[in-house]
Length: 331
Image 1 (cartoon, one colour):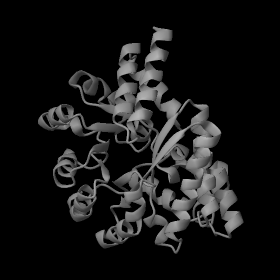
Image 2 (tube, rainbow, N blue to C red; image 1 turned 90 degrees about the horizontal axis):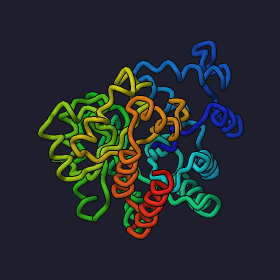
Image 3 (cartoon, rainbow, N blue to C red; image 1 turned 90 degrees about the vertical axis):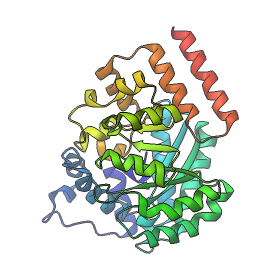
Image 4 (spheres, rainbow, N blue to C red; image 1 turned 180 degrees about the horizontal axis):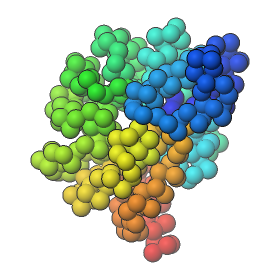
């Protein structure tokens, strides 16, 4: 889940007004006539790049640390109402530093929201820094340098790779990922969303990632799928996002049944919920409606998700125990 992807149209317009940010003229793009008009446009994305166009415009309203804190806390509060007890969330510092926002504003604001989420909701969180693959690798390297202390100290949980996938294979980020691996920093990357299944193999072999984000193309390579299952590498599926961005026509086309049958670990996530009109509970419900999973299958998904998380072992044990108690109560 991308924190910037939880920026609702109402909050976007509010922050634009507070920070003096001029949004696109509605004469040129009617979507910016009002929050409702923008929300309506979000229902008509034609591709990942079409979505990213609005995604990066939205980011422009985030300037001060308090903006980033408000954004993240708004998401954590919503997630709490849907039963979330642990959230591992992405953020894109390059999208902010590239327009003059200080790296510290971004991270400090998000960290404050994470601490408030734990105090106010009992929710644990982890922040994952993502590099934007449509920008030069040299800029990603500079961002990695800025973040190294936070990554080593644990303020940030790890690194990822996102943004436009087609035409941007993972291998150019090899050196950064090697440095992260050598420093015992956790690593993931978006692969096999709109890009080919070969990008998944490349991310595993060249970047040595420990999780695969999206990965809906994985079943196109049976040998690779078996390797992912054997190595217990978790795939973070985002059902409603994949439908909204036309990666698949319906949730029922996702490889959830195949992953269960083949032993591929996966979790269910919301990706950019404010843009795709689907927070975490809506994604779970959509999966259930499409696949009619049993209680035991949901138990396996929940426990696999926890085991694949990047929190400490004591927190994993507590959440696993909670899953078992819930299943026993409803079994």
